[in-house]
Image 1 (spheres, rainbow, N blue to C red):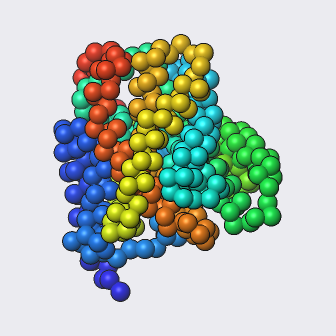
Image 2 (cartoon, rainbow, N blue to C red; image 1 turned 180 degrees about the vertical axis):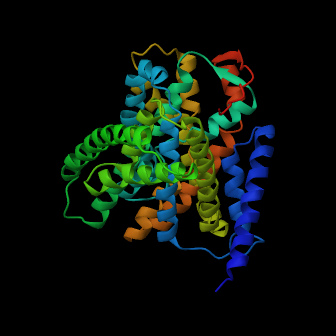
Length: 405
């Protein structure tokens, strides 16, 4: 049993290294998420740190909690005026785009990795969603500003496509563990989750706004505690009622972030910091969870799958999901290249592990490898891709200093 002070020393050291790595990564054009993963892997059982960690239930719980914070914070900083013009294309990418990516990637994985059809589609679903947080951290460091509605579209897609990937992963895991079920039986579940998540997220978001406007507390610090409590309820209530808690958290965040209430600037800064803490902590834990010694066994097929996902599946999904929109070929090509994979595929890969799916460990290792390749290849070439696709609008103006009265 480790002493409390030793655990806190390790946690503090890893967090400090991650913050410093984020600063270094921005200067080098490397996504901080990749460095967080690397630190976790170095501290893990196969690295010099030697920390043994294989607690998949704990990793899944931490991943779920972290995603709630990240999605809610993403909603808080989403401006509805910027999202409204791209709502249709964004929803198309978040639903049809994820489904097409799942089908194409699954078909390739069926033969490249010698999986059954359901196992291959499960792998496709796990790696189907994008994580644009790494994209904009690099773009901000390089002072690149995207044309037209590209930035809000990519932000909206990354925040709203997670529920679709989560549903597909859970549904395919159920089909693998309960062979008597039919694929058509999970369709009503999908409709139920999406509708309840959307409606309850919108309604609960307005409830959060009303409480933040009317409730007066004796200490300023309690407002941050209140905001966390309301955020957790926004996720848990729809999830308990059979809806998508992740979609509800994102939608509620959009509602709250676009309304005025006392101490809004302070609460937004608090949630931004919490989002960073959760993201760093999540990637550190996921880095600890993986065993690098197991990756070479899947390296060759995983590299092929990564190349297919980046160069074939994602571009086809983007171009078919945006057939008649105002985005040009260069803009669509950039959207396709921005499809970075982040924490969500690794978290989703723990679902089949806990459910006892036969090829679960192989799926987990391949998913982790795909995330590494995506962050390394796509994350480091975003500036180049923006220039080649001609989607730059020029240098971004210096950020204004936010003052709290």
